[in-house]
Length: 319
Image (cartoon, rainbow, N blue to C red; front, side, top):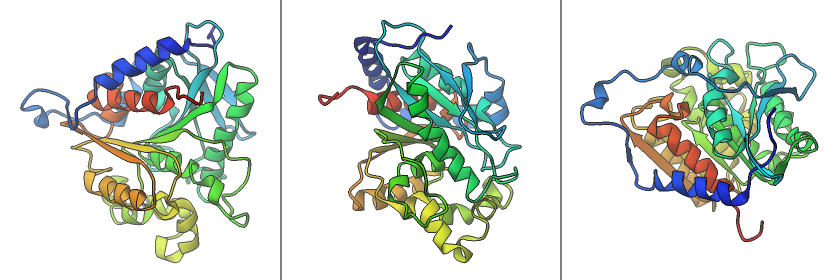
């Protein structure tokens, strides 16, 4: 049975310990010569052992509208913060599922954070793409309020975190409140977030469109939007994080220096644009690691992600 609480002092201690472990940037992931080592693949993450499956809960009527909730194992009745975790995979179902982010979800739960690891319809599935993929992410986030009526979740301390294409959706969640009522992506009551952790995330759909064939290997962006960016400019405006700045909450962007899906130059361009709009943005680059190390909890990039989530969720004087 999953318990539903975590003492604040233990959460703060874990947060400080992990944060101290990643305080100097860039992180050195391994010994000299590691740059020749094989980088992790999505399939490597999918075969990592996960201690618990979590509680599977439907947030909608479609068979793909569900998530796995993991609560910290020990506690004394206090409400705990939560991270909404969104997997990647180029918004394309053959590439990844929520199993890909399960090891990270488990590690975060072990660190004292409730995790809501969500599934959603991708563009190749009925109802996915425009606007279904976005609406699923939104509905999954809003469903946290329902989860909080059943579990000891502190709805004032929520962070969104996503890997790759899921990083795009996590950043987008922070912008929902500014959508016009006429937007097909609008709806629901946007859940307030403490911040966003973009885990090797896609921050600029127009920029990524120019690289999609060499990264995703297919027409990812136009399949998600229902057209090339220049042909659906109004959709791009509602969907691309860099076009929706400011977020209004802090964001932390973490990736390895050998990550060519989320290269440093693209993350820095997003950070510059966000700061110009008044956002607080941190960029963390981990040496000798790639795209999927970021969701592997025992790798330096994965540890940096856990520390970033804990920093954003740490209690403040207003809590």
